[in-house]
Image (tube, rainbow over all chains, first blue to last red; front, side):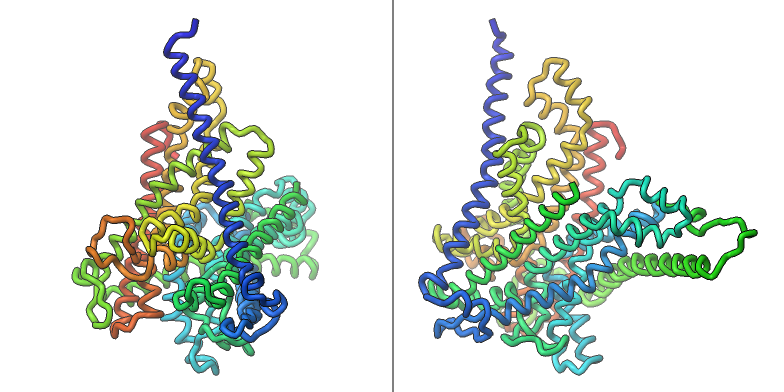
Length: 294
Length: 308
C-alpha cells in the first residue's frame, strides 16, 4: 500500500524527468534545424543558380546578378583580420593568462578579473563605435591611409575583443599544470621565467591551443565591430591599412538590399553557411586538442 | 603562485653569480616587468575606454535624448523607444531562455547517464554555442520572417536571441549545480527525498546565487546584442506606438540603433546620437556586471548562509 503522498511524489518525478529530457532534446532539434535549414538555403547558389563552388571560393569578382558570386575577397578578408587578431591578441592574451596564473598577487587579481568580465560584456557595436571615433582618426593622421578605415583598424579592434577569451582559457590551462612539475623545476634552480617557458608552456600546450582556437572562433564570426571600421570595399587588402571586407561584414552590408530569392541573397546565405562550417570545424579542433590532453 | 624568494634564486653568495646565472636572473626580472606592464595595460585601456566614452557622450545625456523619440531626417532625435525595446526584448528572451536552458542544464548535470543521448545533447549545445551571431540572425530571418511571415518582430528577435544564449545559460546552470557538494544530495536522499525533491529543495537553493550571477551577465550580453537582431527585430521602432507592448511589431533596440545611425541614417547629428547611445550601452553593461555580483552574493547568503 503506497501512501497518496508518495504516489504524488512519484508522479511528479516522472513528469519532471520527461520535461527535463524534453528541454535537452530541444537543444538537439534546434541545432539540427539550424544546420539543415542553412545548408539548404546556403547551397542554393550552387543548386538553383548553378554557380560552381570553385567560382564562389576562388573568384574575386563578386557580381551575383550575372551569376558570378566570387567570394574570395571576403574569405581572404575574414582570414586576414582573424590572423591579425591572433598574432596581436593571442600572445598578449597568453601572457596575461600566465600573469594571472603565476604572478598576480590577490589584490591585482581582484581588479583584473572584473575588468576582463566587463570587456566580455561590452557590446560589439560599442567596440565598433570606439574604433570609429578613436582608432580610425589615429590611423588616418599617422599613416599614409587616406581614410583610416581598413584591415589594421579592424584587426586591432578584433585583437582587443578576443583578449578575454584567450586570457581566461589560457589562465585555466596554466593552472591545470600539476604543481609538482613547477616545484621540480624551481628546485633544480630554474628562475620563474625559465619555469614558465620550459615547463609550464609545454605542459599547458593543448589548453593554450584551445584558448587560441576559441579566440579564433570568436574572431571569425565577429560582425558589427569590424563592419564599422574595415571600410567595406570589395577588394583584396593590398596593404595593412587598405580597406577591404570580410564574410560577416559583407552579409550585413548587402543583406538589407537583397530581394528574397535573388542570386545576391543566395550568395549571402552561402557565405553564412561557410562561416558556420568554419566555426564548427574549430569546435572539432577543440575536441581533438582536448582528447589529446586526456 | 611561485614565491618571490625562490624565483630570485637566493643562492649562497659564496658560489658567486656566473655570467649565465646573471643573464638568467636579468631575463627573469625583465619578463616580470613585461608581464606586469601587459596586465596593467589592460586595466589602463579599459579605464581609458570608459573615460573616453564619458567624455564623448556626457554632453548628449539630456532628458530629451534619453526619453525622446528618434527622428528620421532631422536633428534632435532621442532614444526612449529604443531603450524600451532593448528591455522588452531582453525580458522576452529571458522568459524563453531560462526555463529551457535551466531544465536542460539540470538534465545534463543531475539526470543524464553517460550515453548516446547525453553526448548528442552536449555536442549540439557546443555547436550552438559557436554559431556566430550574424549567422543566427540569418537563421532567424529564414524562420520567422520568410517561413512564418511575421515580418520583423520583437518576438522573432527574442526567439533568435534565445537560441543564441541557450548554450551559455546551460553551461552556467551545469557549473552552478556542479559546485553543490554531493553530501547535500546524499543527505536529502537519505531522508527519503526523491530526485526531484532533492533538486528543487536542496540543490537549486544552494546553486541559486551562482545561477543568478550567470543569468544577469548573460542578460547584459542580450542587452547589447546587435548582429542577430538586425534581420529579425528590424531597423525601426514600432509605428503603432513608441512604447509598443505587441510582440508582433518591429522593435529596434538601442544597440541596433547605434549601428543603424552610423551606417544608414541620414540625420545630421549622427555623432551626438552615436556617442550618447554608446555611453548608455556602456553604463548598462557596467550596471549589469555590478548587479550580477551583488545579487548573486545576496541570494547565496539568503539561501545557504554562506558568504561566498
